[in-house]
Every structure is written in structure tokens, then in C-alpha cells.
Image (cartoon, rainbow, N blue to C red):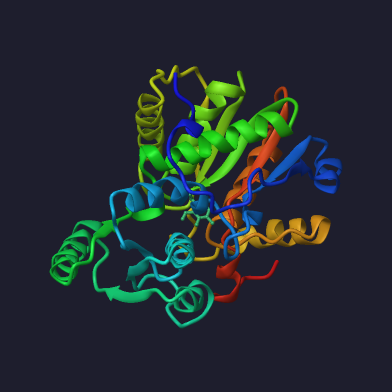
Length: 321
Ligand SMILES: Cc1ncc(COP(=O)(O)O)c(C=O)c1O
């Protein structure tokens, strides 16, 4: 069997990220709750995408590419982190952004510009159309001698998901007795990597993914995990209850949910930790509601994976509790 470390990757983030118990929250809720701080990974404002990009950009670099494309919403964390990593590698970055979400030059859009990315707004919600536009630009730029690589939305490919297998390995070394790992789900790669990683190094631990986007992640996440397992030459052996997906979309993707505000404020005030209203705020609130409903009972600690996203706090109006 292979390991994530056997695949070529860049070293862009500062890993392992910290993982520690949230003492005040744990005392208040009578449950051992830890946090894995992937928001502190040291690139831009941090976040989960860097672990995936370390693999995906190395693949692009090895193929001789000097230009990367990616896509997402106007306030995409993935787009801003791709721009940051590309800047560090001296690559040109073109972002194809959907108008959805706050599109003023604040938050991640401001970061995209600071990192020198070219921004192209696309007038469609369908990824198929966006990939057609990428193809057209690829043809145009190849005539000028450039070599381009398109990174899929969210970086959620089997190779990218290996980054989260490595994150599970870190959790296993940092937290004795992790029983449940919780994360936000937007394109599925983070949860898929954690699911596979838990199988490999946290026996008995389950993954709870809180989805913030209306897609069938019950199917997408296990499929991605299986494809990532194939890269490692190992089967993904599923067990009952090893993955639970709960939806917490509210009024829509990238629309802050007023019901999350008390939870976001609580974590800020008890632990000094920021959550964003699009991903981690919804995920944390979803986790707290499962906890209150007794649905996270059982052995072992809960580990919340903080996947970043703070830039959105400065791009949209946050509801208050
Ligand atoms: C801050 C943040 N958290 C979580 C996610 C979801 O991760 P994934 O796309 O791997 O499901 C994203 C994806 O964009 C994100 O930006």
C-alpha cells in the first residue's frame, strides 16, 4: 500500500497544523471537543484548499504548466488560495468566477487581486459552460506558447483528497482517541480524504460532513474516497455509520444563516476563534445541533476540522445573534 507522502507534492503550507482541545466549549457542553486548525496553515488566510493544491499544483508543474485556471463563486476561498499558491510558484493564475455571492471587491475578491490573479466573471452557473470557456482560453494561450492546467472546482479530485488523508494522519498523532471528525462539505474532497484517512489510521472513528451546497454528497464523498483509496492501492472498507452527511444550507449556498449566528458568536467569545458564515459557521452550527440532539454521543473525542474561510467575514453582512 502507498501513503499520501509517496506522491509528489509541493510544500506550501506549514504542517502539521495545531490540533488541541477546546476547553471552554467542552466544559459547557460536557463533551470532549477538539479543533484541527487548518485555517492556520500559513498561506494567505489559511484553509483546507492548500493541502489539495500541494498535490495538484505539483502535478501541473511537473507537466510543464506555467498557467493555472480554476473556478468557484465570487467569494471562493479555493480561488483565492489557488491564486496565492500560484503567485508563490511564479505561475499565472486565471480565475473563472460565478457572480454568485458578494461580488464587490472585498474579502476573497480583494485577495485574488492582491495575489495578481486575472479574474474573469462568467455569466453561467453551470460548470460545463465554465470548462468550455477554460478550453477556449487554453487554446488561445497555447498559441502564445503557454501551457495551462485547469484545477477543478474545490480541488476535489482523488489526488487532492490525499491531502486530507494526511490530515487524518496528523489528527491520529495529535489527538489520542478521536472518535468523530466533523468538517464542512462544499465539493467533497475534504470529507472524502478524512473518511479514507480515518479508515487507515483512526480505527472506529467516523466522519460527519455538514454540507453547505445542495448536492448528493452521500454518494460523491464515498466515491471520491474510493478513488483516492485506489491511488493508494488499498480498498475503502466501509462500515455502518462511518460517514454521515447532514445538510445545513439555509437559504442557499453562500447565504449567511441567522440561526448560525449564536454558535459563531459563542465560539468567538469562548475560544477566540473565528468561523465564516459560508462554510465553517454552518459546519460548526450543524455539529452543535447534532451534539445537542445526542447524535454525537459515543466514545472518543469530537474533532472539528477548521477549514478556513475567514475572508468571507469581510465580504458579507453577518447576521447577529
Ligand atoms: C472554508 C472552506 N471550508 C470547507 C470547504 C469544503 O471543502 P470541500 O470542497 O473539500 O468539500 C471549502 C470549499 O470551498 C471552504 O472554502
